[in-house]
Image 1 (cartoon, rainbow, N blue to C red):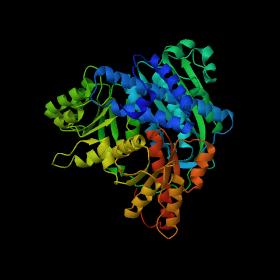
Image 2: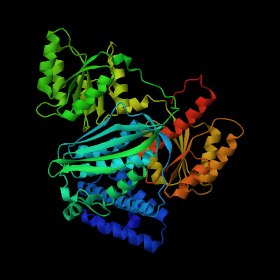
Image 3: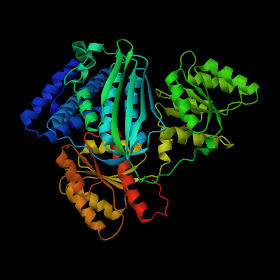
Length: 557
């Protein structure tokens, strides 16, 4: 049994209700042991990560269910604590906002992807669409924008049993150097009675008492989101009808970058004027995908199912214009995506179109089925625009090759990125394991150092593209190690991006990280979207500075 589980002495988990009692026992453990907040957070972080790791091992189904409830309870307790901490900082006027450069589509796209598993577990479609008039490179606090979005989408998933959840982002107005964005989250859930629509934005309030009993939660999420939106110069409101669903809207003002960091651009000219057939039973998915492909110059046709797709393909072939590219939804009623592809392959008169499959739920064995059926690419929804563009450009270019090409997936796209070397300075074994797993899945090469001195020794032996630096470590802490690195750089050489990893989230701690020469920070427990957004931002700052020194050299991240 993992160390943290031994500490808390959880011997039995038979229901979700036990989770509340277990949370109380953890609080008592903290009081009796005299743990400080940092140690308490680390213990909860360890509990969540340990459960995540052990749940994948060989256990009986009952043991796996028990560990799943351990993880659920730990995550729920962390959510409660984070909500209370945020609310208390807001009430005390201690909550501060960052003002950093970030890519809106990538930042929010990462957040949406972290929520997709929860929505797909309930059989819900999750659609994400950013309008073309929204600037790509903005200035503000991406973490707070994501926090609001995650809260709204999380609520939508919680209160929706069937149908879909769609997220749209549009530019509402612009002033000199600033843009007002409007983000809308629409669901087909239980809805909210008119007399409760104002009440839900108050602290510790939900639509009614039964909602708290059935779905849980602190009732602080919308209150915190409201305050955050107001601090960004916007407003938040809801349109809802009971039993039909809700639309939550919020607006916020963000700066627009004047000097955009040079980035490698994917040449979409290969897609121009290519006919493509979109097959998806969900209207919102069809509309969003058709709009995206049209902006890339493609000529798209849409149908809502397999039978209609075959009919349209037959007609196009008779007219002498067969579809060279077909994008198929994996989950459709009557005829799913794999069955449709099999029919297309058996009907040789339909030609040999390149097929891309988009699926809400990835199943074990899907890759083998794709290879057997000759499917060229396989992506899970919601695919970010950059992923979809890269995928389509690749399969279109490879369609002219005689030899069979490997299946394109999200993982192969990540492997195509330059293999950036990251040094992880972290003394906690659980945090090491979690961070290494996340970074390696992203395609990074990771070297681990157990403390600040080990990090300095590693930098003497090889070069790295970025350092993830834990703040609290034995021997030499993160601040001391960063100071030593910056001192070395004074004698020449490029500035090495350093991101602090800290369990502290107070204004003073964040300012201390920046003052110590760090380029960014992420709070623990590690959240995927926050980690990768911080990495992209730190690398972007470094490349921007390099570009100012040598504008004639094209930079590639």
